[in-house]
Amino acid sequence: MTDRPLPFSAHTGPPAVVVTDLTVDRGQIRALDSVSLSVPTGEITVLLGPNGSGKSTLLQSLLGLVTPTGGSVRLLGSPVRRALRTGRVAAVPQSDGLDERFPVTAGEVVMQGRRRFTGPWRRPSAADRLAVDEALDRVGLSPIAGRRIGELSGGQRRRVLLARCLAQEAELLLLDEPFSGMDAGSEEVYIDVLRELTASGRTALVSTHHLGTVERLADSVALLNGRLVAHGPVAETTTPQILSTLLGARLPAVDDRTPTAEGAL
Ligand SMILES: Nc1ncnc2c1ncn2[C@@H]1O[C@H](COP(=O)(O)OP(=O)(O)OP(=O)(O)O)[C@@H](O)[C@H]1O
Picture (cartoon, rainbow, N blue to C red):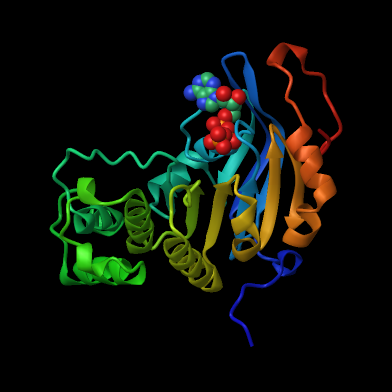
């Protein structure tokens, strides 16, 4: 028996993320063009695409950080802002946003994940401290809980931010390029943690442009190049033919765009 989640097509519950006809313009660049995507609950969906293909823009749209030109997004059945207010969605941006000069420890960063339960004012309880300890232990960083964030390596900082997601007990994790600059051991730990989370019914949407991690990580792959090129199981979406189409594609500027059939480049 394996504890891997059910295959792509076997999930029947409502999707964790529903993106409908999402179009986002960034200046003169059409970063996303009428993207529609359902992210199944209880799975790891990998958002795969070359540099500039709109992966970060899509994740930023899910976090309400960019204003769409058109279309809509629902997270966990709710509009974006309502879903985010519940604390059931956790995100790790591409640039971790941690100020190296700020004298905050790894443990304190992970404790931020408990604000969903403590609110901004209440002191952390024993249960909150236990949740933080367990989260740090799960990502293998207990020994450095008291170290300042500025003293940690890039890979350690990424694991701290994953531990913050664990402490938050989020149901949906939105992770932008979590493996960049990470060594093989850290990557393995990271993937194991995501697998455990999804085996317990949580959902992860993870962007990357590294094909190498996809097979070990993904239940399904959404291939992006401004438009959604394909979405489905790894074996069906990462064929040489589809990938060469993806990598060879070029997005025209906003004004040059003409409507195309869904899924085509
Ligand atoms: N803040 C911004 N202002 C203007 N254009 C932007 C901005 N951020 C991204 N873009 C443009 O939007 C398009 C999509 O960029 P995005 O960062 O979403 O791609 P990506 O797939 O995440 O790329 P990468 O793999 O390099 O991180 C690119 O053409 C990029 O130049």
